[in-house]
Image 1: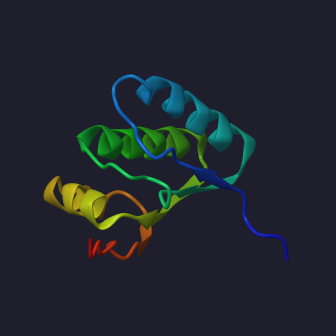
Image 2: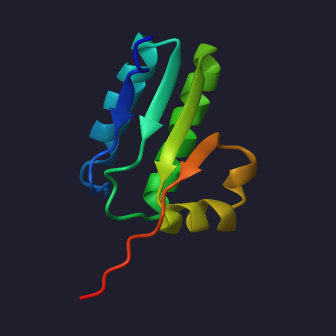
Length: 102
């Protein structure tokens, strides 16, 4: 069994690269019947990331395709929960927080 292809988000998403990342994600959705978006590499979370996930979810839904977001960092999960998007977005595998002992 081959692993599902995953779209890996960059370490940082901000207003400078948001539209480019969104376009790449939409192209990924177009290429697959079921899309897995991994947030494991995301180093900074903010409301623009939550908006981006919502846009991808809506885009996939309009295309009749499934989508899931995995390895969601705890700080982004907190933003999503606060906005009550946890009831809408398909989230799995909340990542463990990184503990920095330095």
